[in-house]
Each structure stands twice: as C-alpha cells, then as structure tokens.
Length: 314
Image 1: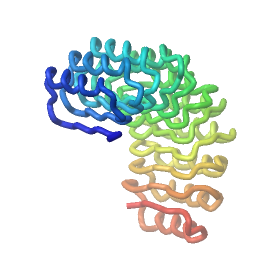
Image 2: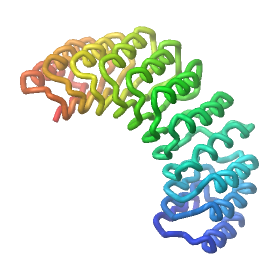
Image 3: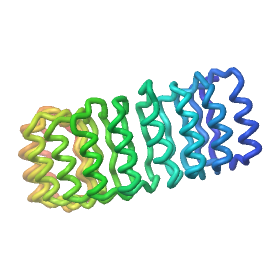
C-alpha cells in the first residue's frame, strides 16, 4: 500500500497517537491524506514525531483540521529533518497554516518542496508577507495556491516581488481575494519584466477595465501565460477591448476565462476580431455575461474559421 486516505472520521488524540505509532514502523506509504479529521495541535505533534524519521512520504494532506500555531511549530520542526516531502496541503487550518509553510520553506536545504496549497487559510496581507519572505529564499516552488485568503493590493505587491525574476513558479492561484486594479498593476509589472508563469488565476478579485489595460500592456512583451482566469470580475466592454489586445499580442495563451464580467455585444465584437488573429487559443469562457444572440453570432462567425477553438457562452 502506497496511499492512505482517512477523511471525516473525527480522529481523537489517542487514536492519532496510535495511528502515528503505526506509521513510525517500516511503511511504503508515499501519500497520506488526513483531511477533515479535527486534528488539533496535540495530534499534529504525534504526526510530526513520525515525519522526522520518515523517508517515504512525499505528499501530506492535513487540510481542514484544527491545527494552530503550536501545531505549526511541531510540524515545522519535523520538516527540518524530513527532506522528502514534496507536496504539503494545509488548506483551511486557519492562522497556523502560513506559519508551517513559511518556516518550512525557509529552513529546507534540499529545496524539494514544489507545491504549496494554502487555500482558505485567512492569510491576509500579514500572512502573505511572511510567506513571501520565505519564498524569496526558495527556488523550487512550482505551484502556489492562495485562493480565498483576503489578500489585497498590498499582498499582491509582495507577491509581484516574488514573481519578478522567478524562474520556477509556473502556477499561481489568487482567485477570490480583493486584489483590485492596483494589485493587478503590480502583477502586470512582474509579467512585463519576465516570469515563468504558465497559469494565473485572478478570478473574483474586483478587477475592472483599468486592471485589464495594465495586463494588456504587459502582454506586449513576450510572456509564457497559457491559462488566464479573469472570471467574476467587472471588466466590462472596455476591459474586453484590452483583453482583445492581449489575444493579438500574446501568442501562447490557450485558455481564457471571462465568465460573469458584464461584457455586452460591444465587447463581444472586440473579442471576435481578436479571435480571428489568435493562433493558439483553444477555449474561451463567456458565460453569465450580457451578450445577446447578435454578439454570439459575431463570435460564432470567427469560430467557424478555426474549429479547434471552443466557446462556452451560456
């Protein structure tokens, strides 16, 4: 057995201790998922003791438990010794999450950790700052998931500094925060100056046409983005016009999500013209906008010229 999953079982501390004792023996388990088990700081301590000497575990999911700052300290101590873990998921543990990851990244010498998932962890800008300080010292992280963390333009500015010149981060998920146009400007500047990003999620971030203008300007420089999620914002027709410029200038974009952005037939016209010039786009999502049958027809006319493109507009 190489994978062990135990979810929603309300593991008590004594059970957690027994479970940890079992794992301390020789095992081939490489993936351990203990999501939603009400594991507290004490339970985290038992697991941390096991992790210090474990040489097989590569992926650990402790999401949606009750691990606080003390449990975070226990886990951080364990990660000092364990250099095999590559993927740590601590989604939904509250204020303890960023402490675990922030310390762990900073102290790991072998730089094997590649994925950080801190979705729904209430980081805010303060937690983001601590995380970014650690990230500046790490060159191995490939995926960073910070969705639903109440990050504002200030946090976006800090993240932009990390992205600037970073050659390993390829996926950054920032959906459902409050970055706004100003925060988008900082991220656009990072894109303009060169990053390794392939996928960027900025959905539900109160972004308007000003933010889109900044992204369009950044796209005039060659960037690697293949997937851009801007759904559930407020870009409107002017923002759609800016995005049309992105499609014309950004030759690698394959997936573009513009759902729920108050785009009308006027914006659809801008996008239709751009679709005719894009050679790489494979999927564009426009559902829950204000596009009528006339606007949809404009888009379909362009889609017929290249059947590879897929349009979701419902």
